Every structure is written in C-alpha cells, then in structure tokens.
Length: 258
Ligand code: PGA
Image 1 (cartoon, rainbow, N blue to C red):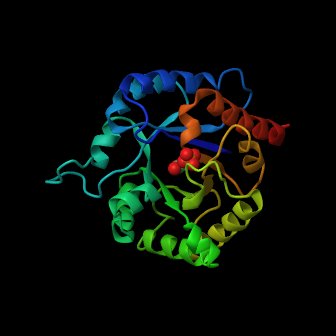
Image 2 (cartoon, helix red, strand yellow):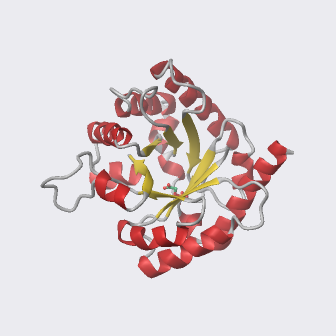
C-alpha cells in the first residue's frame, strides 16, 4: 500500500478546508486502486472536514496532540477530543514544532506512547538539519530521534506506527532530498525499527518521505519499495499539485497490482 498524508499546517481556515477536502477526495475518483489518504487540517476545521470525508475511505489526522486525556493544559487538545472527531492519525514531532515551539524528545515520546494507548496511529516525524547532514551525522541524528521517541513503546501489543523521514532542510524549500538518499535513509530507519521492535509483524510500521514533495517528483519517490508513502505540506494545499501526487501513488499501485 502507499499512503499520502496531507499536512495543511496553518495555511487554511475552515471554509477553505472544506473546499480543499472536497477537492482532495475528487482526486481519488475513477481510479482502480487508490492510495490511503490521511488529511491533517488545522484543529478548527476538523469537525467540518470530518463531515466531508465521512463516506469516503480517507482518514483524518491531527497535526499535534497532548499526552494526557484531559486536565489543566490551557490551549492543548487531547486524544479523547480528537477521537470524538473521528481522528485516527496524529503527526508527532514535526520539525516545525521541535524548532519553533521547543518540543523536546521527552514530550514527543510521551505523545507517541499516549497516541498508541488511545489506538491512534502516530506519524512520527524525524530528520536531520542541513548542518547535521553536512557533518555526516544524519543517520546518528535520526537514530537518536527514533530511540528517544519510541522509548517504552511495545508495538506488538499496540497499534501501527508511521515514521516520516523529513530532512529539515527539505521542508518547504523546493529542495527535496534525492531518491537515492531517501532510499538509503528509509532502509536505515527500517533496520532501526526492526532492532527496536524485533517481534513486530511485517507491515506494522510504514515509512514515509516528506520534504518538498510535489506533483513532479512524487512518482520518483512513490515507485520505490522502500517508500510506503509521502507526507506533503505546501503541495497539499495546491489542489492541482496534490492531484498529481495522488495520481502518482495510484499509478504505482495499479502497476503493482497488474
Ligand atoms: P513541504 O512540507 O511539503 O512543504 O516540504 C512537508 C511537511 O512539513 O510535512
């Protein structure tokens, strides 16, 4: 299977989200095989977007969540609230939150543990900065992020896990990683996950690539066996671009099933 995650970030309001959700669903029409679609609107648009996707196969994801079910946490949103709105996936540890809001490895670990305990699928984002890549530390950084985020997780008894490899320097820059670098890092991430979860059945984790994925380069990533899907930011709010990405995923799936 291939998954396309749309991360709308803080780029659309409620009305635009509804229109974008409708248009995003239309991209699935008429295809023999369709990718899994996970739409992550801003919190304020979740309930309206839910109505739009209700009778479709698309899933709704949140862009963040708190690690406790309720309590005195002003401004935060709990998993319970999100589950009530039909949210099944949650982005956790996106680099924008790590960098802009000081989200720590410890916070990310608590969120992953909590999401899994609530039967929500975490989309854990990891990735190195430009300086770290230039210094040759990309693997070490990603390994450290995975180890800390997944501390205490028992995947064989809990739900599934998505890891999104998103090199920080490729996010929102029109400078995506090369397919070769993505394959190499995805293989490495898989080996780390297999070491952390030796008993996890195949298919319990999926590895996505994110960072300047667009209509032009999506097929190149998606056709690779190592890439289970893509996490799309900027291009997910440009419907023509998004359509091309969904079509690329559908083409890959159709070729596989032929
Ligand atoms: P981008 O963002 O597609 O705009 O690079 C990806 C992301 O931040 O998830």
